[in-house]
Length: 306
View 1 (cartoon, rainbow, N blue to C red):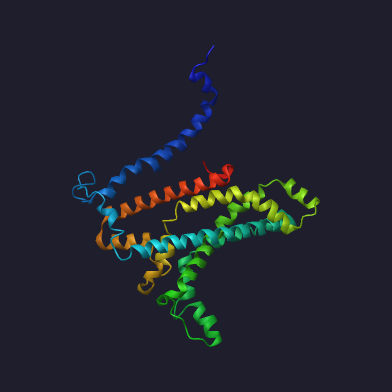
View 2: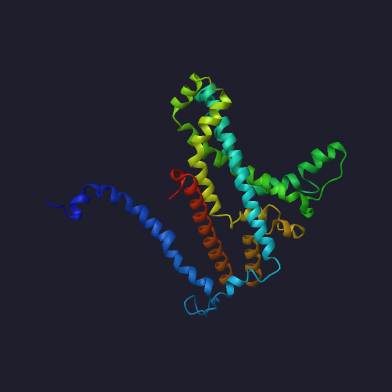
């Protein structure tokens, strides 16, 4: 006798009930706000309200591309994020492997405190410390390092050539701790029998890392990189606006889509333009994730997200 749908799924009812809070949160927090996408196609007038504000079609989107800064902000956003993905991923993997080697060599107690160090470093109030290091008159680098060797103080906040390197260092300083813990959790989850078999076969520590650890990390690396690619048109606002202290001489080298939209919003109070920029970033990010996942699917189908 053919069972009804209820009978077939009755034993899963407790699991469905457990899903309800998460689904409600997802719907309320992620899907209901999507109705606000209409703001990107309107000239918002607060006296009329969002629904009665006049439609402007795609005028808000053209704002980003009809300025002399369009190429600069797009270039900065993409190139910085590409560098962050490559350097951040490499550094996090190296730290995770070092922590795992420390664990295997000295035992659990020796690394319990050390594992917290990368995360604590990433939680530091970065913009404050960067200013303390780079301030022209009172900064640590000018006073305690350059001054100690008799050099002239550097005006960091008016010299653009140093800032690509400063921004990369600050990004790594801020983010590598969290990323390394994710990779470390993946390393710890690898089958210890693989390492034992490799050791029995005469593999050195370095060979075990190359042939066991890195292949085991491949799914995690692909997943995190794909997620990062989805936000390649976004930038860390604090990193690009607060760390350079919104310095005028650094605009060309630190200006990204997010900071450009913020400055435009503060000057023109055009919420529709800001919303359009967010929609544009989301659509391009989604397209890039689909493209990257398509490529991964062709190369290694089992490692693709879908």
